[in-house]
Image (cartoon, each protein chain N blue to C red):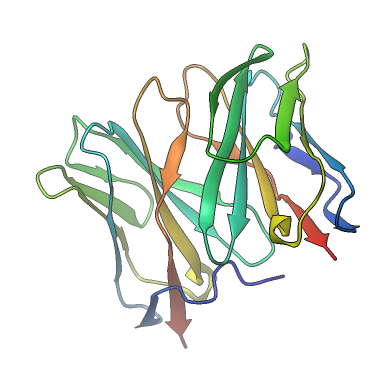
Length: 112
Length: 112
């Protein structure tokens, strides 16, 4: 059974640019969540989607957005990148009867 | 891979000894808890979970203890091995919130 797949693994962007990250959940999982991980702040919740609907959103500026497609794949977008957006972005999926999240390997975003 | 956290508390144990990693959770209404292991350059890996109606749950070489009175969670690893070296996070969930709150993490170092 394939795990959670995140692409790309690494990204380098310039301040002011925008970026889109992709996440393919485990087959059959309909909930997808996104987290930002930094050494200073740890793992911070960004948003969660289920059946193309955002059910919860963390305390991040509006520059951070996401969406989910009918096949449960999800994307997150960060516009007008800032140096502080450099982080590991993690996606996790779960099935309705299994609370436990399964994480992908993440996308390492570096903003220069 | 990059360090998950630069200033994490560190627990150093001798190979073969037992390890105990502690976590204080934040929300008395949280009803589901997970321990994750994160190795350098990888996403968090699910280790074991426990629901709030339980005090203890055992897995293979791991045991999780939950003390709701003081909002404390611990992870015990028996016969610690070099492959156990990683950062360990606890995560709490309050059902219906569709998100997890993660602890700051503990770095486990296994000494040969």
